Image 1 (cartoon, rainbow, N blue to C red):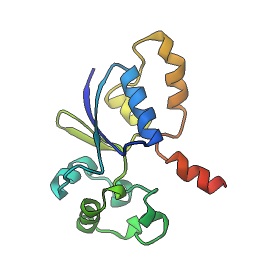
Image 2 (cartoon, helix red, strand yellow):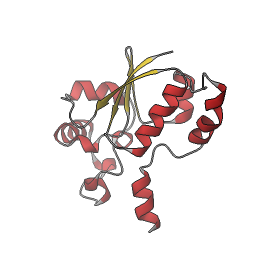
Image 3 (cartoon, rainbow, N blue to C red):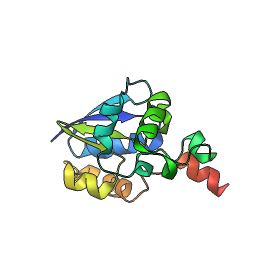
Image 4 (cartoon, rainbow, N blue to C red):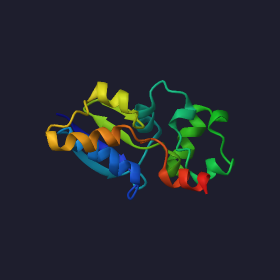
Length: 147
């Protein structure tokens, strides 16, 4: 089992669900507030790796939803600077286990990397239900689109 540094937005419904999946699988989750962390460009870049800049961004951030910031039009340096200034632009969660850093919660990727199989049978049904939910898109954003 892994010890995971888990950078989240406090109160985020999906981050809560993601931590529940990880904990049910026996991982130790050390939650940190993504919005109050002292980020640097180098530190953030470790989480993003070779992903395209657009995959670094929180699509629910007000500046992105309004069109003020278009992730596909940002270069790496500009995106990093904007994220340092406004951490809400950072896609969540950021996770670190030892030297490996990842952004977002793509269930299949996390399953392959860390494992999401529950360690107790009674958690199995709840975990399977969570795994089938959209754990990437903010539920509040989905409700706004539907309304």
